Amino acid sequence: MAHGGGGRMMMQLIDSLFLTAFDNDMLRQMNDQACFAVPAGRMVMSTDSHVVSPLFFPGGDIGSLSVHGTLNDVAMSGARPLYLSASFILEEGFPLADLKRIVESMAKAAQQAGVSIITGDTKVVEQGKGDGIFITTTGVGVVPEGLQISAERAQPGDKILVSGTLGDHGIAILSLRENLTFHTTIQSDTASLHELVACMIEAVPTIHVLRDPTRGGLATTLNEIARQAGVGMMVYENKLPIREQVRAACEFLGFDPLYIANEGKLVAICPAAAAAAETLLQTMQAHPLGSEAAVIGEVIEDSHHFVQMETSFGGQRVVDWLSGEQLPRIC
Picture 1 (cartoon, rainbow, N blue to C red):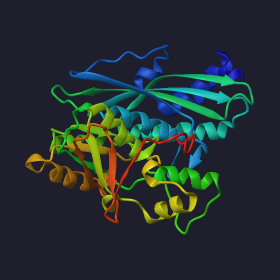
Picture 2: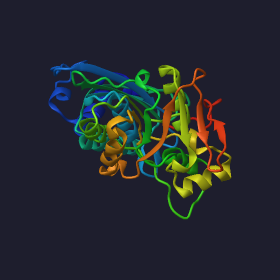
Picture 3: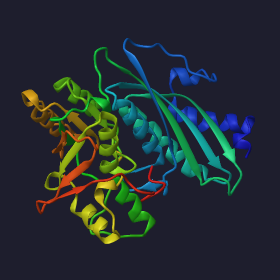
Picture 4: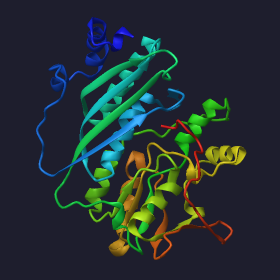
């Protein structure tokens, strides 16, 4: 408890762990805030709390996830992420070795993404009143002048693209919880997408919408966009990129991969005119984080704002909002 009490032990924890891992000029000043210059453009801010269980999973952990998740939310506006803050809620008795592993993972993820964690906070709650560790991160970034990417811009005729295979993160988490074993390990797709986004915007600056399909998966994301833009969506089942292991796991467990969370994929909606969709697809596929990108559907006129899917058998069905909580503690 003393590590969150504001005294000597807390300062020792900050010095020996957080400051060592996240070291940068602004953090080193040890103020209660960070002061930074604002580049030209519009500022973007997003915040996200991370409560994933288990804390460590194939392909990542709560530390890297807390960095990637917030950076991706910032990047979906077309912004270049600049800085992060990080707040930790620790449960009394949480192993310092696990905390060190998580913090070092966060530091590595931030360094690879080219952003700095410049301020933060640490609290400790009594044993039994937390679940190991919860992390809240807030990110800020800058959108260049003239760039407008927002869900309400989706228009009938636009093409819908995804940057890669769906459901990897959710099934990776679930496989650990249920002690499921597969012939090959399903790894989380957790990754920071802002460099992919920058390449996409450079190639096709007329992109209308970007969104990362996390909780609720692709289905919920498309329903959100359809509602915001007042349009419908038509998705083609035979165009959806889904790993065979993920598809098999979903069939075995009774899940629909369209509702499974992703942490390193994005949905892009762009005009079909002037071969924009084809240019965007080629740009995405040329990037390591978009090598399995695909055009999966199109925006249509629909006063009911339904998301529909043309099945592989030639029929159609409505892809509704996620009902209830399919898989809690996923991010």
